[in-house]
Each structure stands twice: as C-alpha cells, then as structure tokens.
Amino acid sequence: MKEKTVFFCSACGNETPRWMGRCPACGAWNTLTEAPAAPKAAVKVKPLRRSVPKMLSELDETDELRFSTGIQELDRVLGGGAVRGSIVLFGGAPGIGKSTLLLQACGHIGQREKILYVTGEESEHQLKMRAQRLGVSRDSVYVLAGTDLNDVVAAIEELSPELVIIDSVQTIYDPDIATAPGSVGQVKQCAMEIMQLAKSSGFTAFVVGHVNKEGAIAGPKVLEHMVDCVLYFEGDGSLSYRVLRAEKNRFGSTNEIGVFEMRREGLREVPNPSEVMLAGRPVNVPGTCVACVMEGSRPILAEVQALVAPSGFSSARRTSNGFDYNRLYLLLAVLEKRGGMNVGGSDAYVNVVGGLTLDEPAADLAACLAIASSFRDTPLPDKLAAVGEVGLTGEIRSVQALDQRLSEIARLGFTQCVIPSRVRGELKPPAGLQLIAVKTLREAVEKTL
Image (cartoon, rainbow, N blue to C red; front, side, top):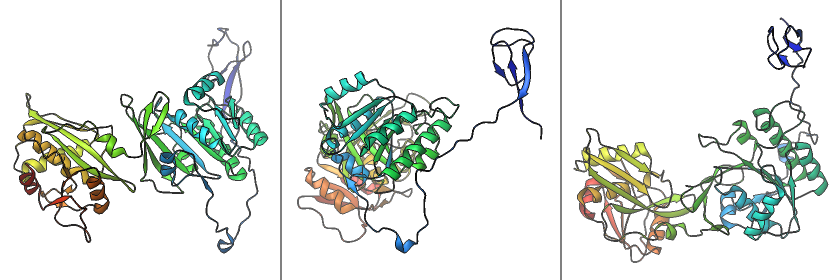
C-alpha cells in the first residue's frame, strides 16, 4: 500500500495535498517539497473508572435517585424529576427559550445544591443580565464562560457540583483534536467526556444542543444515543406558548409534554393547557369544533378550525397548520365519498389554534365536523366536542382513554360529545354530559348539523 504524502512550502510552511508550481498561500515558486503525511491522532477516551463484571443477581436494586427541578412541567416530562448521574440533551430552535428555562431551574435547584453553568455562547455579563431579569440570584450557582473542555473538566473536579449545565455542546472543544468546534469528532468527544464524568461523579448534566434546518439536533445522531434523555423545546416564534417534549427517556415515559408561556419575566408554567387553548373561542361561527387528544397521561382540549371556500383554480388548494397534511387529504376524500359532501372542488384550510400539533387519530372526527360545518355554513353547538377516529369506509372507530377524555370535556363545561358507538370496555359518562354515539361519519354530520 502506497504511503500517503503531502507537500509543504519551505517559505511559509503551508500544506497542500498535491504538488503545485506556486504556493497558494505565499505565492512563492518551486517551494513545495514532498513529505510523508502525519497520521491523524486517534480520539482517545480516557476511562475514569475501571469496570468490573458483576452477576445480575448481585446488582444494586435501589431505585434511581430523583430530585425536583422546581418546575413541575419540566419534572413531568423528565418522568418525575431529574435523575442523579444522568445526562439530558436539551434541543430546540434558536431563541425558543432553552437557556431561559435552564436558568430558571437553576434558581430553584440552587436553593439546596451546587450548580456549575458553563456558557460558551454568552459572556458573563450577558448571563448576569438575563439572571437579573429572571430574578435568579443564588450564591450556589457558579458560572464558567469558556469553551475549552479541559477548563470545564477542571472546574467540575474543583467544585464537585450536583448539577452541570453545558450551553451549548457545539461550542465546547477538545484542544487535543485537530478539528473545529462543533464538528462531529469534537461533539462526540466532548459529550463522551461529560457523560463519563457524570456517571462516575454522580452529578446531573443538562447539555444544550442546536437544531439544524431539518429540526433534528445538530451533530452526529450517535449523540442522542449516548445520553439518557432527549428533550425538545418546540413552539412558534410568533406565539407565546412553548411545548416541551421527550424524544427519549430511559427513566420515564416519552408521551408526556410540558406547556409554558413566554413572558417578559421568563417562562411561566401552564398547568391547565386546555383552558388556555380554548380562551377566546368564537361563538355561533361555522367551521370550528373542539377535539380532545391525549398527551401522555394528560387529556388536552384543542380547537380545530376549518374554512372551505369555492376554488378559483382548476385544482383546489389544501393547507393545514397543526394538522397532518396527508391526513387532511384522506379526510376530505372520506367526506366526499362517504359523507355526501362535494368538497373536491373547494379550497380547504385547517388550523389548530394555540400552536399545538394534533398527530393523534382521535382528532379526525373533530376535523371532519369542522370542515362539514364550514362547507354547509352552519355552526355546531357551542358546547359540543368530538372524539373519534375516521376510517376509510366512513366508520367511526373507538380510541383509548375515552373515560379520561370525557372527564376533561365535562370539567371544562361542555354538555355534548360525539363519540363512537362501539367503545372499548365499560363507559361511565360524567354527570351533565350528553353522549352522541355514532357509527359512521354521515350519521355524525346528520346528528350535529
């Protein structure tokens, strides 16, 4: 195998992969000489402790040690609180509120534990100004403004904190690796070093990661496999509400969500999102219906709005916001074929109020009734909600956790609810809530409009 060589300029020391008559760096002629290429230094992961094999029956059976972050919505998504010795990857779009949420958590956790906040993007002065605006002032919160991994490790070993926040992992670099900060090798090495420190020392690490154009955390996909929990902070920049989701959680469920409202003084928890999402709902207006979806163990009511208008083009337009675009096409086809409505030649627009994304089939019936209401220009009853999945033959199929959905619907003052006629298990309707059982989509339209 031929040894790999490079060419060096004797005048300026510039390195090029091939020979050229003139050096592209300094412009000198005939100064490039061939030399063997230096082998790339392998990425070395230094073990912080020696692992000894143990029998499965000898492993410790104690439960993981959890502690509260002081923010109930964050604790809910984490599975009941943060776990000692775990590493959490925190992703989200720029300016969505990742640093704000973590700094607010520092204000609560700092009352009882020591925290190290490593900021690689902001200066100490900028972080201090944001902490004053959020009302965070704790003597147990230490700030390190730097990007060198060796400085971060030295600070952790010196302070022995219970919580370490890295903001962000793309800015931290290892000087032993000859690549730019944020590259694949740098991100993997820095994350591995922090993970080994967390597992050996027992502190909890929150690592902030940037999001690329596709919405995934920038850097290698293996970074998400290395950590114990992956959280995504979502929301529309034009709206004040933010949703925190768990993409991966080794210590809890990935179905729970946390809802926050962005205000000038920081993020405020929204313990009852249904009331917030339905605030300002129009009365006696065609094209609106309320759906109930399950986000983990929490039922949430959301308003689905639809607008159907005659199309002025040869092909009708379809637009959806917060509702699956392909699912909208499917429901429109079922409405025309099985519901007896000629919506194929009309433009259809569907919007979920509040910035939520409804990806559960239980919202199908509410979307169909909203489209039918707009198409007929007839409003649905104000105190009516709909829960059910729509099949391709026009049948209304049952959904899970129907008892919890109905309890939430009745608690918010609704008096009628359209449900599938065939439900799973025994159903006990709440007091004051009239159930309208339907078998097909055509029957649901006839009983409500």
